[in-house]
Image 1 (cartoon, rainbow, N blue to C red):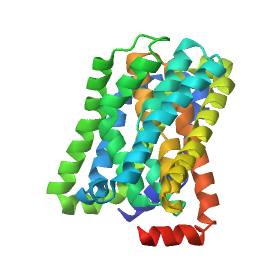
Image 2: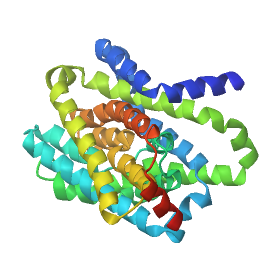
Image 3: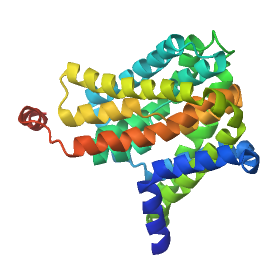
Length: 319
C-alpha cells in the first residue's frame, strides 16, 4: 500500500507532464487508443466517485457561515467563463464544432485539481472546496442552460438530455462516493491515498481516447484551439481575481476565486462533447486538461512566493 501511495503522490505531482506525454503518444499512435473512446463516461464517473470519497459535511459549512465569497465565486464562474468563451469563439472565428466545444468548456463547473492549486498558492482552500462542490452540484442546471443560450447557434443542444447525462456522470457518482465514506470511514481512510492515482489514470485514458479520435484535427487545428484555450484560461484567472478584488475580498479569497474560475472540469467537457456533439467538439476540453494543469502550477508557484500584504491580513482577521 505504501508503494501505491508513493506512486499516487508522484502521479498527482507530475500530472501535467503525464497528460502531455499521454496526448503525444496517442497522437503518434492513435489506433492503439481508439478502443478507450467508449469508456469515457465510465471513467469520468470513476473520477467523480473519488471526489465524493473526499467530501465531508464541513465542506458545505462555508455557504452558511460565510456565503458571500462562495456566491460571488460561483456567479463569476458561470458568467465569466461561458461569456469569454463565446467572445473568443467569435473573435477567432472558430468552426461551429470547436466554437461549441469552447463554450462547453466554459460552461462546466470547476475542476477538482483547482483545490490543490489553491492550497499551493496559499489561498483559501475551504472556499475553493466549497466552490468546486457547489458549482458541480449546480452543473446539471447551469451547463445545459448556458450551452442552449450560447452555443445553440453553432450546434443543436438538447438541454434535457445533457441534464440527464450530468446527473448520471457527475451527481450520482459523487453521492455514491459520499455515502461510501460516510458509512465505511475506516475502509476509505485506509485507501484514500491511492484515489488520486486512480483519478489521474482515468483522466489520462480519457485524454488518450479523445486525442486519438482527433489525431487529424490536432494536426490541422491544434494551434488555433490551443490559442483559444490559452486566452480563455488567462481571462478566467485575471477576471476571477479582479472580480473578487472589486467586491473587497481579501487576498486569500481572491486567489481561490481566481483559480476556481480559471480551471474547469475538462473531463466533464470531454464526456459531454463526445456524447452530445462530436469528437472534434471535445478538442478544446482536451487542450484544457493539458493547459489548465500547466498554468495552475505556474500561478500557484508565483503566489506561493508572494505573501498577502498587511492590509489583506488585517482584513482577513477582521472577517
